[in-house]
Length: 458
Ligand SMILES: Cc1cc2nc3c(=O)[nH]c(=O)nc-3n(C[C@H](O)[C@H](O)[C@H](O)COP(=O)(O)OP(=O)(O)OC[C@H]3O[C@@H](n4cnc5c(N)ncnc54)[C@H](O)[C@@H]3O)c2cc1C
Image (cartoon, rainbow, N blue to C red; front, side, top):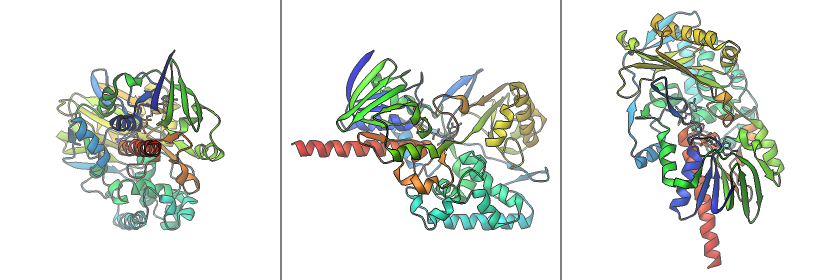
């Protein structure tokens, strides 16, 4: 058992924890990062499966994500645009496939009118929401007590319009059914990306990827920390008082003045806090849960859909894979499609055998791209629900009423304990950008307090 002393111990080597540790080190503080897994990156994981490089976790960068873009520039990482030439496809309520360009799905004119009006209304509501303080928005309490599904029902009888608008937040973002989260939570999701229109616009929200994979961010950040990153070190116990903390992980114990807990809030209860966390945290953390989505990777000998003039971008609230994209790697001759199977659909296919599940998912992709989609040379399902140290995808959100009731306290430190994670971000919420912002914020607070302490002692 190694026993060490540092100024700050960081629990979790995802984008948030590694950003925080680097910022602390830059400010002259000593750090140790304790990571449960045998790798860094958390929900960022680029790996080679059957000869194909796949982004098993997060991958896309959008133009508003300044914190992530700054980090990419600092680390010397390059991006490339998602392939988007040609037509997108949409499968409607009637099961008919239509090719289209632009952002609005090719639905009948009445439905299109309702969709456009709803997007305008949501944009206006989102404009009043500060993503860092959604609980202070006008009508926040009322909006947090009504599910997004119910709110949409109150707006229109047009089911196809409702199902399309719900899709952007439910299946595509929070990865929970639209009855399971509030309208305020939906507005936060949109506000965190700048507007509801930005979320609707695949060319904005899924703009670019990193050459060589997004896991390079945590890998390079960890490289700068060297031996200060300890892998295979799940923290089991955290002892704390006003003087400092002791983090007891497998194989290593760290004594420090402060700790940053940089993991998904759903995992806090894996750590035994001595003494226990306060009542507020005990209650609050029970109202946050992970969404659930399967990210499906299908690699083909060539991007055959491009020969048909298709961009690869595909949507349907009525398909098992509700959205899919051309995910071909930079400079790769082969073509890769990525599809997503969310929440209840994911539950349904996980009740099947692996073979049946693959068949059902590829069948769904073939509805968008034709029968060739059924025969990939590499097929892989990212299943974050079975990952002990994540337990879902993409990220966590509050249940009905939780955001208004508890949101303001989620990032509040408790004694020497700070919290940082993409799941508690305002701008960049649920994204790598948010993880980096939260890592920076936690580090900035600690550095300011340490400097104030040194000033007071001088
Ligand atoms: C399939 C998928 C696709 C996504 N797509 C995108 C995308 O395209 N763009 C985007 O911006 N974001 C995307 N995201 C979200 C993004 O990846 C996450 O929001 C972000 O990486 C979270 O970073 P984090 O550091 O906050 O948390 P995490 O990455 O979850 O890091 C937490 C770390 O803590 C460790 N840990 C947990 N418990 C303990 C313990 N007791 N002791 C020690 N260590 C512990 C974990 O192993 C993990 O390494 C996606 C996520 C998934 C899963």
